[in-house]
Length: 191
Image (cartoon, rainbow, N blue to C red; front, side, top):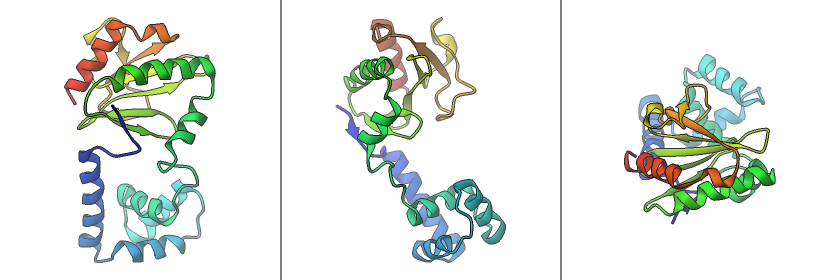
């Protein structure tokens, strides 16, 4: 069964390393960086990232970490159900999501993570992600090579983890069939 709104152990380690590196390498604790962030004259996220780079030589990962602590999103990881409902508001796409989630959650040691633009599943690493498409369909990315199955295509232009090297477009819940279950399990096993 999936654990909702949690990070995988590897993701938790990554965030801990970002924080430790931020404090160790800059000599400034997170609380002070938060105050610096609140003094930023910019209001858009990308503009704030650029401001941190220009004025404090803080690059994207560390700046994003500071900004998320300084300006917690009104609706973010702390409200995964609302994020998921907003993302999967089209009933046809939601039915496909539900079929994917049921298939994934049958696997052990799953961490489900909801993002604004996609739903993700991890074990040690992210192995699958899904996002709705405009026509009521859904795109499913997998952490396996595209040549694993004729159903798959390259996921080079998708906006999710670079680990997800292939994807498939699903047009109905029935597309989450036994062959897709096997592909999900293969991606899970590799994660």
